[in-house]
Image 1 (cartoon, rainbow over the protein chains, first blue to last red):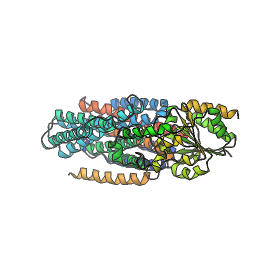
Image 2: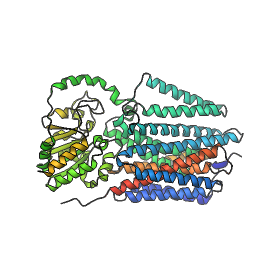
Image 3: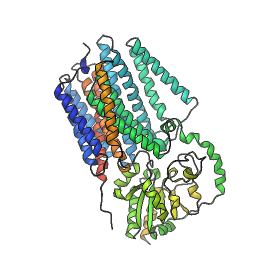
Length: 471
Length: 97
């Protein structure tokens, strides 16, 4: 009898799973509000603990000494990683953890296939289909996430990689995967073909993330987050385990919601993010930059910048990925403190896709002890720029480019932006005049009201702090 | 399609709808913690791993299952702890007058 794990579990375990699933739902709900988020996370963790304990009590689990060793090792690694990781490295951490979830789902599917092969009976159709699906999603999540990690960690270039025949190659691989799957479904058990489709799906994960560049990472990370849930669900179908199916579906849904929010914030469809290769495709517009050469850029020093900030009534700080790279969030907070001491009203304007993952800037500023009521969403802060004396842009570029509003030919046209150009003055801290991720010149830098402070984010903000202190 | 698969499909679709309803309208401040918390939940794969690693004798399935147990536990523990660490920082301090 090949029933094995797909047999129904004892009632007590099923009930515990139901409780755990409910705790996940309550936990996720509470994660949606700042006041209850921490408790929500704890509730979800309790749900997970219950589910694991119930599973260990299952009679078919005999090998529990080894499993406990595995759990202890995994817990130690996870706990150390969670303690050590820098807040600026959070996108990488989430990417890596996504990948591990995908890997686990794949291993489950492969392990189950091997077990079914060992029984000597033909593998049932249902099992083959669900295993193939699980392998596909799990492997794409695994290699896609690891590549996203490598890009974020700058182990490989973060810029979009394009090569000739990109789409035909992808389609060819997909056809190969489908052909292999069809063979396994219709004909027979074949470990070689099974390993081949595993290989193809691993490759697909790499090729899927390869053409996607840095600033599109919030979309990719959210999407892979969703995939890691779907991978768990697929593994649930393989083992006919409702707990896995439910938890996976919840995560899948939350990832999709975040993906939608991120796409909307960039005014781009998911398809254009995945297949558009943003930075690469827009090189043509670089030619137009010749005309920009004649325009005048006003560059100022830290002293003058500090004077503008210190004697302003209201300042809005606009952080971007440059702040994260320079780890300047604490220095930025220090500057805000100094300004507030002088009676300046300081607010932070957060663009939804600033940084490399959803909410990246919020996490960094929270780490620097900025109270979250001081952080304003795009829709709330945009009407305020007209009444703002100085907008201070730190390491952000495309999200403040007025071309998105006015230039229908710009690749970023239509993307909602933070309207810093409407402030009385804008100070931009930037290392040089290079274009942003999208490869688009930023007209903001040439406006009369814009002052450029050339330098690294952390260094420059630190200079501002000391100059403000001397005012 | 067997009854089991069909039931699984029903559960999957309903749970997805619950997910959409529950998570909609999360403020941007919580996007990252929501993502890493959800990510920890996707480590639920650990129980699947425990089930296939459960056999007494050593074979390929058990070995793959044990590797999966380790990886999924890293996902679960790392995910929940890092989320907690982040959420600890989100404090609503009284804004200075």
